[in-house]
Length: 115
Image (cartoon, rainbow, N blue to C red; front, side, top):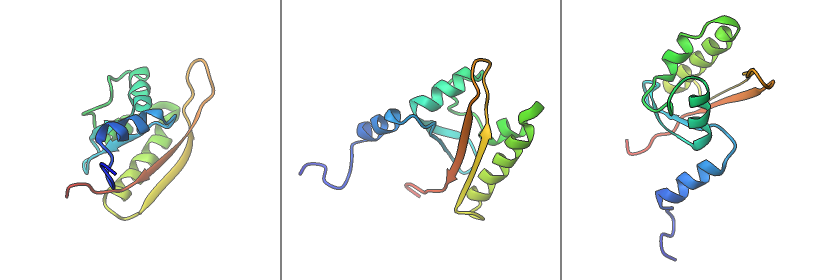
């Protein structure tokens, strides 16, 4: 079977875009290297562009108002996973918009690709 064992990148991208989950891929410094369509839409709705190239740790650190504690907890969880002090970080938190009550689950896992 052609391509056995590997999927062309276009299939992987299409699979991510079919998810309703917001998927962002961060590099070892916390900079957003990639994401799916839901992530890009979420970033745009919250004042950013696609989110690519922004440092998510910096975004969390600069949060203020009622979301500040959650943002700082998520930032610490991401840092723990990036340092390999934890395998997974997961936290449910409110992220309401002006038109709806929303809750998200932040799930952070570590993986390495191409060194």
